[in-house]
Amino acid sequence: MGIFIQLLINGLIAGAIYALVSSGFSLIYSTCKFVHFAHGSAIAFSAYMLFFLFAGWGLNFWIAAVLAIMLGSLLGIAMNTFIYRALRKRKASNIILLIASFGLLILIESLILIFFGADVKTIGFIKVEKGIDFLGAVITPLQIYIIIISLVLLVGLFFLMKKTKIGKAMRAVSDNKDVAEIVGISSEKIYNWSFGIGSAIAGIAGILVALEQNLEPTMGTGLVIKGFTAAIIGGIGSVPGSILGAFLLGLCENFGIWYLPSGYKDAIAFILLFIFLLFRPNGILGKKKEGDRK
Amino acid sequence: MIEAYLIHILILIAIYAIVAIALQLCLGFSGLLNLGHIAFFGIGAYTSALLLLLGVPFIFCFLVAGLMAMVFGFILAIPTHKLKGDYLALATMGFSFVVYAVLLNWTELTRGPLGIPGIPKPNLFGFSFSDNFSFLILAVVIALGSYFIINRIVKSGFGKVLEGIRDDELATRVLGKNSFKMKSIALGVSAFFAGIAGSLYASYITFIDPSSFTIMQLIPVLLIVIVGGLASLPGTIIATFVLMALPEALRFVGFPSSIVGPMRQILYAVILLLILIYKPKGFFGRVEME
Image 1 (cartoon, rainbow over the protein chains, first blue to last red):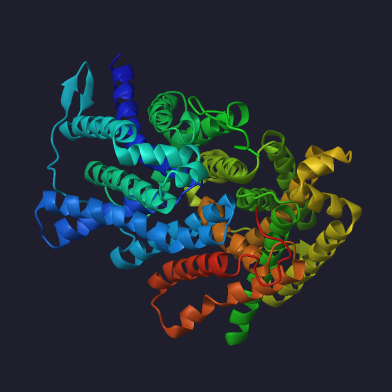
Image 2 (cartoon, rainbow over the protein chains, first blue to last red):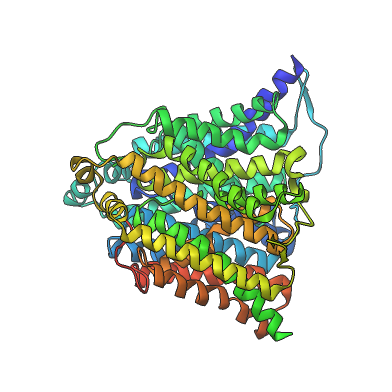
């Protein structure tokens, strides 16, 4: 029983982090209609900025965290403005945008590697605390915060999409870009908003991972792969679906290592991805749209 | 000294040229963005290395490496043949991650992250290619052979059907062509050449580990194909020379060796972005990616 609860908790924590990554990824996919791999670089960038501002410059932690998230968000907007917009202008296909996002991911990861070095770094803001015993399983206070923070953010994102003007505009562009433009919504502006909001959420995920584990230049790649797997499982382009997919993925991975060697954790994600691509490419909640799979 | 260095670069160019023209067959001629290509390279390298260490003759290892990769190519074609565009890219990328995870975790066979050291140099009909110059000749001969075969394939009627599938799959099927079979063969043949290149690579470097076969290692190959231009074999060869030689300049500028690796990646990433924005067809390309 203890193991079951422990794996359940581990799965939920992993799921909470994945959900932050995949919801931003899905948000960008739903409006811009391409796979933005470089989403992972916003994660790593925010985490390293926090390290730089807090551990390097000695800024107050909370100020450093807010600045780091803002910088991550700006990075997303910059990628959209300088690279993707130029590509869209010449009507590049979504495959070209995907390859470009790969290039961006490698570019930013390598820059981090040059400036900060390849060695693993820690933020060291939170002292190592003894975990709380919970039904025979152990959970640290930070992990509880991770689950709470991500749930609050996800609910916030949900309301943003449903209730605010910008959220409605995003959904309009996602639904039909041309019609949205006819009624006076600037799609370019909406793309920037999606990148800004999505990357900010990714930045928060990066900071939470940095606090719970540590920093590596490649941290973003690993997470964005999980994020897009979750997004596809849940239905790419559907933000609630991607959150569902994220928790499903987190739980599958953690329960999977009950039977398999833990090294296969990543393989579980891809086997899941494969199964969904084969049998249900639109995911759990994804709507089937004409021309989606062309 | 400089001569030995030059030979080393030329051998790598020959090996990468094989991988790149194999990807060209898939991506340029058949329109399949196969991000799992590097997995075939890895499968070939591991198959060949493990057989060589068992004392199997090189020619046999070399061919089995290609065939093994080809079998995996056919296997990959079955689930992915209906997918297109970014879905195909994601599924094939997923394949490369699964292969990487297996190479890393099946420690009884692959020794996992420790890698396989001491892979013997090729030995053909009693002649050992142990020095780099003779290896270069072997690699160039194999690269030329691969070029010749793939060139024949794309110029044949089969190649035209592949281009038809790339440009309009539905129309090709209306004309009575079995697109699933055609695409499977294209993927299988492409995997075969990636596999034999992997075999050469393993025997040349004499050490392989799973990290040589990640998606990050695919970027230079993908870049070569895009810079050379889709559906252009001579363009691919020229791009291989330029893009393999270019990062070597970083070494001579005097960057410390810890920086050279990431600088190389930055250089590739910047070239990739510039070419996608300003010259999407590459330098000799006939079609644009869709």
